[in-house]
Structure formats: C-alpha cells, structure tokens
Image (cartoon, rainbow, N blue to C red; front, side):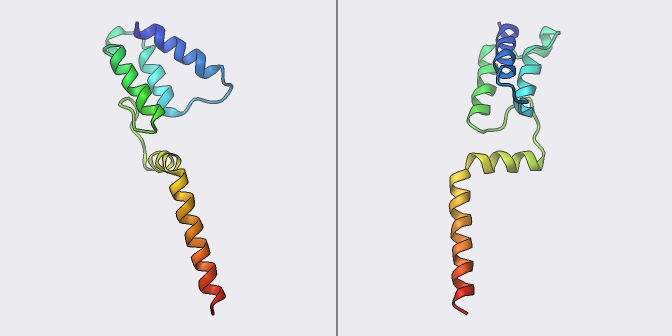
Length: 99
C-alpha cells in the first residue's frame, strides 16, 4: 500500500532530526495524499521516485528551479568539481607566480 509506505518514509526521514529535502518531501506528500487518486499509481512508481532521489536524479513530483538543479548536480559530481576547482586554483597560482 502506497500510503503505508509513505508513512514509513516520513517516519524514517523525521527520525533523522533534519529537514527533509524538497524533492523527498514532495514524494512523501504524494504518497500520503488523502485522495487515493492523487497518490502514486502503485508501489513501482513510488519506488522509481525514491530511487531517483537517492541517485541524485530529478523526481517526477518535484519541479526543480535552476538553483536546486545546480545544487543537485554539484552534489552528485562533488569529486569532479573539487578536482577541477583545485586544478584551476593551482593553474592561477602558477601563472601569477611565474610573472
């Protein structure tokens, strides 16, 4: 039952003591909708959104703005971003030092 899974998901997320990210809150809200027609069509649809969220992919029930998309991509590719930034800082330092 989608509603029961939504309640479990809300309980698990609320137990962490931190605020739920907006996409996850949208997933929980849809799973716990009072009107059964507004809930996920089935468990596979709920599972797909949770899996997308955990993989740092967009979810179907939350439309990201530009800043949220940028934050999600920076988080997903954190190591690559740090390496590129470190390279650029070192490159700039060497260019300035060579003057």
